[in-house]
Amino acid sequence: MPVVRGWSRPRGGSRKSITAPRPLKGAALDRRFKDPSLRRSLALFRAFLHEQDDPESCYSLLARDAVDQVEAYDGSVAGRVVVDVGGGSGYFTEEFRRRGAQAFLFEPDLRELGEKPPEAAVVADGYLLPLQDGVADVAFSSNVLEHVADPQTFLSELARVTRPGGLIYVSFTNWLSPWGGHEWAPWHYFGAERARARYRRRTGRAAKHTLGENLFAVHIGTTLRQVRARDDVEIVSARSRYWPFLAETVVKAPGIREFATWNLLLILRRCPP
Image (cartoon, rainbow, N blue to C red; front, side, top):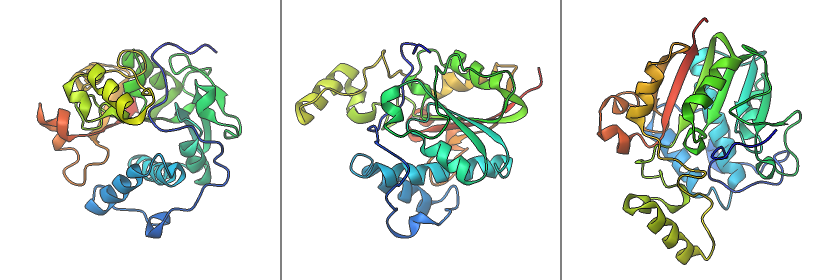
């Protein structure tokens, strides 16, 4: 299935295999952190600092944390059908499966799937999923929306494949977040082209992301207004995904939220047709 321009996986290097991930360091392996909490936020932040040199630890921890969030809003995923859209080489899919879900990965980029993607992974476009209406109990998309040229069409497709009453989990890094420029953040505040040029000078290689091609300036206020205007979903929660306290409160403060939220998490419920 062809890949639509502007729809690509978020930052992070491709990985060869997820069948034998390296263990996490310390107590983060088995502990479920209170969400939100300072301890959880620090653990995730430390993992992000080692995303490039230890992606297994980073993404394994992030996957466990994300599935914890899904279960906090919707109960155990055991026995449920989960659609992971844009999940790269499959850390989230594997974590859902470890907890008993029937999870399926849909990823448009063969390079991101790696050499040994999860079983039954599908190369498919997030704008046009090869699924019937209402087949999923949970539609899951982590850090993809800022890489989509048409977020509303992408959200419509997530809603279409989710059954009435099902859960939709969508998170994204908004443009004015300190991480909005991805690998060339926080210099994106001074302009995207300047930030990309600085990245090349400092690393000797071209940046993975280009504004307007595979990274887009998505804003929290605009996104919330668009989602609230939809009649196919209702918002269960709009919160900062990583903020250590007042995770929902910070999103309610216009202006401030564009900088302080860092990463917006939308928990949506599919409305009956």
